[in-house]
Amino acid sequence: MNKKKYDFIIYALVFIFVFVSIIYAGKFNAFGKLIMGIEYKTFDIRQNIILPHKENNKNIVIIAVDDQSYEYITEKFGTWPVPRGFWAKLINGLEQANPKFIAFDLLFTKRLGALDEGDLKLVRAVEKNQNVYLSMNFDNYPSQVRIPPILPENLKINLKNGDIIKKSPLLNFYNCRNAMNELLDVTSNFGFINVTRDDDGIIRYIAPLFYYKDGYYPNLTTLIALKYLNIDPDSIYVNKDTLVLNDKYKIPLNPDGRAIINWYGKEGTFEHVSLWQVDDAINNNDIKFLKEKFENKIIYIGTTVTALADIKSTPVSFMYPGVETHATFLNNILDNNFITHFSFKADLIISAILCFLIGICVLRIESVAYSVIFSVLIISVYLFITVLLMDFFNIWLGIVLPVLSAVLIFIAAYIAKYLLKSKDYEHTYKLAVTDGLTEMYNHRYFQEQMIMNVGNVSRYGGNFSLILIDIDFFKKFNDKHGHQSGDAVLRQVAQTIKKNIRTCDIPCRYGGEEMSIILANTAKEDAITVARKVWSAIRERKFELADGNWANVTISVGVATMPDNGKSPQELIEYADKCLYKAKQNGRDQVVSEID
Image 1: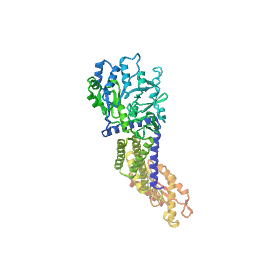
Image 2: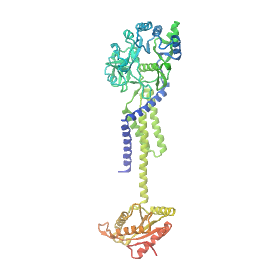
Image 3: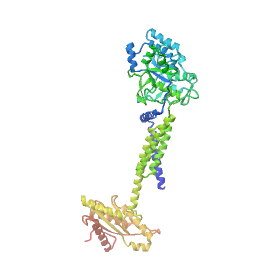
Image 4: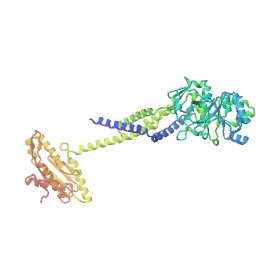
């Protein structure tokens, strides 16, 4: 296998390992929550970035119980909530301006005792004006606290294919905070105003429909939108992950049956008219003011004062009035402007693409700085694309998983690249210091090790030894048997030497038929023992020649030790060489360690 194929396989395995690890980690709830929690924050950031490009519907107006109105009301009536006759007067006064709808983000719950005159006025005002929409909310209070009421049949919607709503634990309720029965008797314009928060307490989703007991019930805003668009509530249905209102208007749903809100701005984006101003205009019969503010408008009435606890945290503001959340939901429906969140599979595909591009950068670009720059550029381009898609196409593409995958791939690829380069360096270095024929260290490495060992002994004390080996009559051997057989013998002699020394000893080819062994931290006596062991092993072995025949060879050996026989590489080599020469003079095939 060539190096390119080998490197490709390594990088592919790294890619697969990182990718599979991320997918596997996604199975753990804690990891999934962590990823989604960060992903929510990226959604919030993108929503705030694209706010300047949005324009809200000017036909949606909020009558706000703001700080001034709250003080106005408590000054006038001495308490909150105000007598219900006040709301009856408000309805009748607003009707003079011919509004499209009047929607209360306030609850008119049943009385514990008999109805007073104010209650009756409210009932009559609602009965008279069928463009008034009222609210209730679901909860899961136990029946010991409140007996779950049976709601009128005319409040239900005959939703088709509604299992996504029915099976959602967020939208399936056990109990309900009921409205005044007298109001339920005179109007079916009741919707529900439940909102759900994410784990970080922020509202990003809203439910168009709810399931209670054995029926589907509309969100207050869903009901208003259907009336405004002249759509029969019983004609809507769910198609896979979409709530279809008609051919034009559709609400994309998450797997839990909720829709993702597309925000138009911070609090106060929709026109707010203070409740005290409206009441003052009604008291003064200021029809001009009322018409200017409310003619043909959809009016939401709700609280914006912090003291009344209907302030929500949203991606665009931590002080967002609940009533304005419903106005935003209506605006989304009328504009077909909901966010669609792509699935986890889409995130995985995008992650794979980013990882591939990052991997190419790491593989093809040698410079670390340039590969970092290009990788950051790739991620930055992707982040920019996610903002554009949310801005122009209302698409929520995941950021955390793709970017996390890309960063991990970058790190893992560089680790793999470093390890491969280290291996290449080791291989190259080995080639540079190894004799190709004998696979012993070469003369260059021999010199380096001599200098290093001399330095160690000089600095720290102790000793080390050098063994020089020469194959006897090797020139005659080559002349007789040929150079190929000579090379074969050299290789086999080298193998024999390596088998008979310690792993810490350093065998080298000194030159021609001469070889050497460097023995660190070895005294003269131990070096002589090693030399005799090698000498004996070679003497007793038969060596196979190139032509298939066998032959014996012998060696002459010289031994030197520092500091006894020298204090520099040159002195030690010279002493060992003299011992070797003495061995040859004395008839060869022997070990010599002293020259005197």
